[in-house]
Length: 358
Image (tube, rainbow, N blue to C red):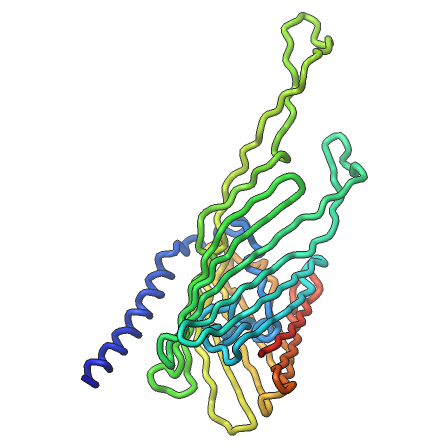
């Protein structure tokens, strides 16, 4: 009986790995950098959470708890608290603010259920028309948000899986678009029975096309008369025709990564990670990151991201770094993290995160 159980466990692991790899391969990651700028819903690509951004997102194989929701939903299954809340703010490019909040609850024997919300603060934009190209004196405020629900579960003491459902909403003046997207992730700890070696795989933003609609796509048609005098006015209601906006695909990606935690001692911790990201609307990206922790209280992090594809010369990210503090307040675990991400052409991104574990 013990032999049968052992075989079944290994078969379960192999099947899970095959299923996720097959899913990633079949998710249409073709074109890459040759399709730059042709996708939409790019708010899905804006990362959240200071600790992982400081490591360039290379830690998809080891990220855990509520920090894992964006990077790899499987990691949320390793949550140690009964409930956790996370709040994050990013000074993004072009003076755009990114606000993010999430809550997770750990249900014994069932798994971890999480909810999250990401919004963009773009500010007011002047309204211009063909007749008034310098502005009408009015403004509009674009609204972009992604609301997600995640279920994560540990299948064994080494394998965890996670699935996220995202609702996407975009509103620009009098037009809007909405859609849905799915993320699926896997984590395998102590890979090949090597203690500290981890493997991660995640597929992101798989879903149907989105399309804009709304009254902003209505255009007034010029009246056509039947009299010989083309200057004669016509006393009738104006007519309109609707512009049909083209549908657009979501920016899907497939990531695979490895991490290693070498055994040092109880006071000092080191984590090294790397991952490869294949995108359907941009060139491939390679990320590396490292984290040093002292006494599970103070953390220093750094990472680097590169896209070597010759067709992706406009990749604007590179070096990142950050630090964090973890402190127990008795019944509450407090984590405060900061990250800086350098960018080309724009000011660097500053990210602040606070999480509370209960």
